[in-house]
Image (tube, rainbow, N blue to C red):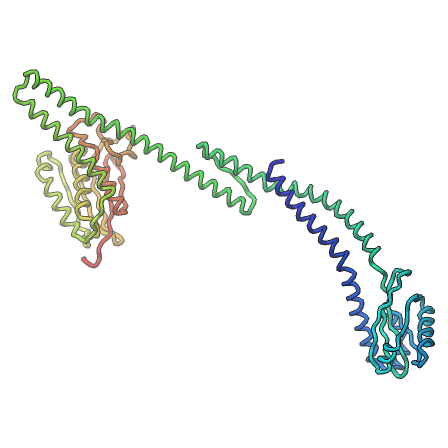
Length: 463
């Protein structure tokens, strides 16, 4: 039995003991008083009904009334001889089986009867271990005595309390058994939840299946949801750590090549081997490093930079951006098609400078990796949003990890050909900007073509 079982059973037994003690105290101290109160109240109600009858009717129906109300009724004419009156009433009661050792009508009581007031008395018969509750009333010079015997409750209560204790002892044993079964049904699911929680703490994201139909089941469902979320967060953290390791490896590779060249050509100059081109090579490699560092700083700045949101004409921005690539597109014989015929509302609310960077990265990326020398750009309106997409041909390598395409330094060309790979930061910069805009974005691959897309809200007041 574990600690929770013991605690629950202990508290249940404690409450049970409190109930037993309370019950015995109530029986011993308050039950006799309550019983006497109820008897007095019932006798008063009976005498009120008898007082409402006329004397002849009362005398005629006296025996029937005794049987109906389970009381003793005697009567005698009122006399001035108090001793004789008392002896007569005691004798009448004796004839009906009521033997009283203490009974006496006082002068004061007789005076009240003569004024037709009811007199209520209780006579304690200690030797008989009972009391006699009586009401005197006078009707037409006849005194009526209505009484009821009440046995003393002390001994009876002692016997009742003893029997009650025996009963409670049996109930206690039964309660212990039932409590053990009851607490077991509660503790078992909690033990399963504890095991699941310990598993989660050791990165074993297990689930617990409990069907109790109460708060314990709700707790189990919450544990399962927490396990799922922690497992997802753990996998994401591992992926981020892996990306960080890959990021460090990639940036080391990117910097290693130009630094090696700089070192080699510097040594050549020192050894007098310069043919007049060594300085140019060093400057070129230095520029490449500066460009890489600039891109990294730009990516870092974009994650914390304040965005200046305003309304601008996306259509004009798109054509202005494409104009910068016209010569390169013609030189590489790329067929570019732009479809903005469905772009009736082209004013959007965003940071124009940042969106221009997204367009630059998407367009330059498409020019680098297009395998069919074709690029298709589409812009259209739908549901108060401007939807942009750019499509180019690719080699759909099944081993390529497309879900890493947005990560820094992940390049589509595994050979790291400088003409193709670039810095590998363009799509990461685009993702950061679009995330800051809370814009839906992504890519999909179909028929050996890849399409990048994003959506931005339209400013309807400007269109």
